[in-house]
Each structure stands twice: as structure tokens, then as C-alpha cells.
Length: 86
View (cartoon, helix red, strand yellow):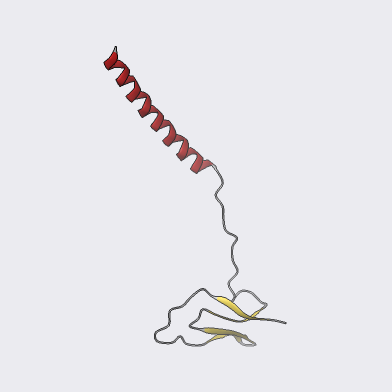
């Protein structure tokens, strides 16, 4: 009976791995994912009068937005509001 008990343990371990894999996939598919809130671009935010990314600066004018040209060796960062109304 000794050789059979080794085979039974191997089969039990294999089924355990299969069960854990299936449970992990099901949990990943069924649980709700954390979703970040949609961010508003500074260009779309009416209270933001001036925004930039470290390379370009844009301003909200009466005729619409106007932006500067980036420098030749500029690496843009995240677009941020630099001056708000009020």
C-alpha cells in the first residue's frame, strides 16, 4: 500500500493546486475592481485660468485657450492647474 499512498498524495496536491487556481481566477473575475475617479483636465476645468506640464503653459483667454511652445529639450510632466479663478 505504500506506493499507492504516495500517488494519492500527489493527486491530492494536484487537485488542491487546480482548486486554488480556479478560486483565484473566479475571485479576480467576480470581485469589483477599484476604479480611480475620472480626473478633469485643467483645459476642461472652467475655474482653471492657467495650466501647464512643465514644458508648455496654457492660458484661458476670451478667444479660447492659448499655449506656449515647448523648449527643445523639455520633458513634459503631468498637466496641472497653475492659477485658478478668484
